[in-house]
Length: 62
Image (cartoon, rainbow, N blue to C red; front, side):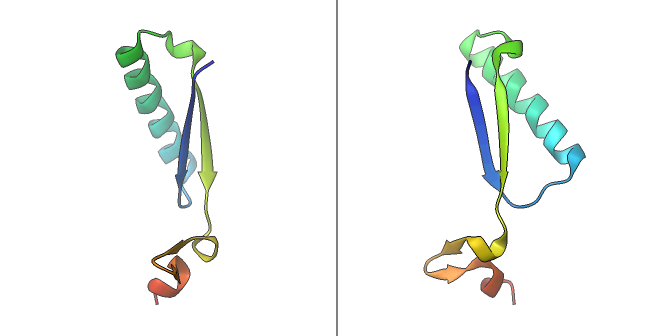
């Protein structure tokens, strides 16, 4: 069971559906593994829980 994980910001349902479809189709094509075998996980990260260069993303947007 191949797993694809997407770590990013908040997405709406339509965005997740499109990404899941595109990720799965392309991974299946490249690997020759059936698309039905793939699992896609979305990990949504709040900007207060992510820092880049020592600064929280929530603070960088201000």
